[in-house]
Length: 218
Image 1 (cartoon, helix red, strand yellow):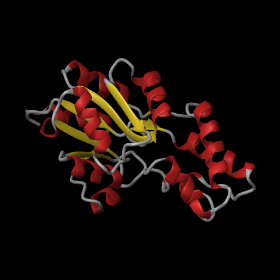
Image 2 (cartoon, rainbow, N blue to C red; image 1 turned 60 degrees about the vertical axis):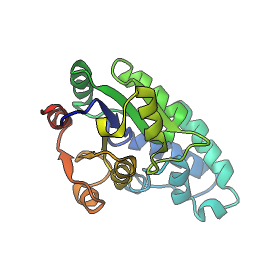
Image 3 (spheres, rainbow, N blue to C red; image 1 turned 90 degrees about the vertical axis):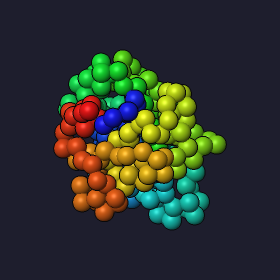
Image 4 (cartoon, rainbow, N blue to C red; image 1 turned 135 degrees about the vertical axis):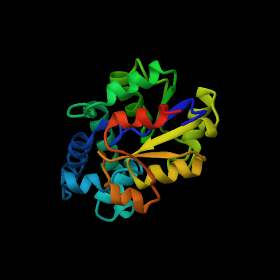
């Protein structure tokens, strides 16, 4: 793609497989408060809009449950410690990021995962390739609002017409649209190709290095 200077990535389901650690921390908090636990499949289809929304979907009654805040707090404390017990990059991701970096692209992560975990995982796995990592924080709207993507562009010193977004869900397709840039949809993530197509996805990568081929082609 011509004129592309930066690639902005989603994190969970795009760069990293994180479902098991999310499930374990969720179920730790639910069990502690005597609530029904969730399967891995249920977690897979409840992630994507931030951890608070994940817990709203997993706790009976959601925000109306009087134990919601205490349960959510226990989740956050557990996940802060255990966010990397079973997580790791998808096969081919480190090689993709290295190839893009060597080609001169600026690289960013924009996630709905809370900020501390986003930065910790980015530093652990991608410190040599990712230039900026932005997660959920107070005072800035989560994806699919464009706010966090706009902040990444500001830090990188690029404009929307110089960027492409990479994600694995309907949230990511809408985020790219709201940010004024094209979206590459990942076939290996938490949502199926059909679900992403139904959300408006048009460009697909079957494996990580397909992203390099799409971005770097003149």
